[in-house]
Image 1: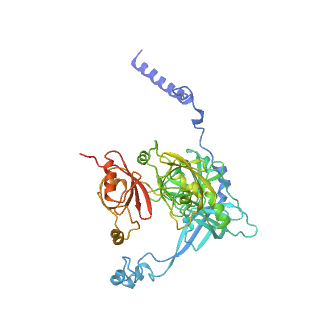
Image 2 (image 1 turned 120 degrees about the vertical axis):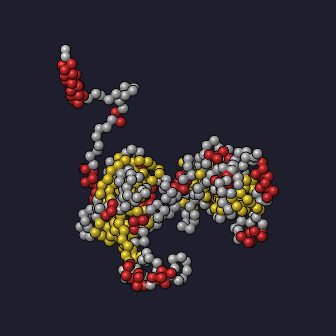
Image 3 (image 1 turned 30 degrees about the horizontal axis):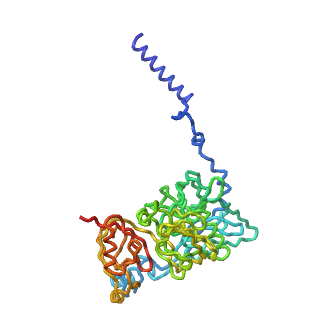
Length: 491
């Protein structure tokens, strides 16, 4: 056979093979010959029928407030004095010409956000930052009807606000169905509806990227992270699951540019439920209070306290005449259970305490000197002027600081609140003390669970610990902290 004939047959074979591959594609195979059907893609969900039912529960919220101009006020020095250098240099006419009229004139600042109807009687849930300090709030429904809104109550700690609109005769509202955010799974489809950049009834979809996300927004945060597009104006809008239930309140985004980059955060609806009930009934939120400052049990702290793992909430300080002090809790106790619920991380405790009814007797399981103890506490009420019950714990490393014993003369000259202990005079940058978080002005109250009030006691306590970590109880202002420091290596 000629080369031309061989080439022709080869080409026909290639064409035939390609057609067979297209018409009869090969089945996907798995290494263990067991195809996990739950992972096979069956096609993307059709959101259209669901969106038609959900859009009417979402509303547009516009707010306005009177603010002073952003340019420096004439006669008011932005650098702290009474004289205005801008006025002396430019004069009043400059501001009037370039900034339009009187620079002291107040103006109206507008804000846009979203919300959703939770009760057909006109109750609407949104973010506190959407309506904060507003003196006029308007709500526009999907039916394009606009209403004046009244603020029933706000809770800045969770960034939630409850509004109410007064319906006209014949008006009806469709309320959202609230779901169970605890049952959400990472990877589950979710839908966000809101008014980004003022574009009403905008729908985006994505998945739950993570749960229980903590980003430093407050003591009660527990965000749902999603990649459903959330932008300015989405704040306060609902996050739905595919059953059409609200599982979150879209609250904020993480973005270096200010626009969506696939990282949005929503307040779990389960957290919002208790807040809404209290705001609806009393217009304010009441939270439980123990009167303890707690911190994370780091691996270093766990080792210093003789624990196998870092878990629970370490008590750094106990407020005087608080429920905790009356019940016998002391600094150094590690709370590992609250009313039968295990405390794995420090951040879990404040939320459990906050949700406890005032006056209820809560049962705490604590570790003290390596032994488990049961303590019963009558929960008090958290007042606005009381500090939050959490403080971050900082680190590890080696000693590197100058100290001196506190004397009556030092107390008088420096105005110290403590009359005993060891005062930190300076901290060497990059040293173990610096890395551990010790600061100039801190007062060392204990070393390795032993009180220290003299330089001799301090030297003896540090001298005993040539290797390993040193556990210190530090007083910083009104706050106490447990800090672990690794001593310098001896040559």
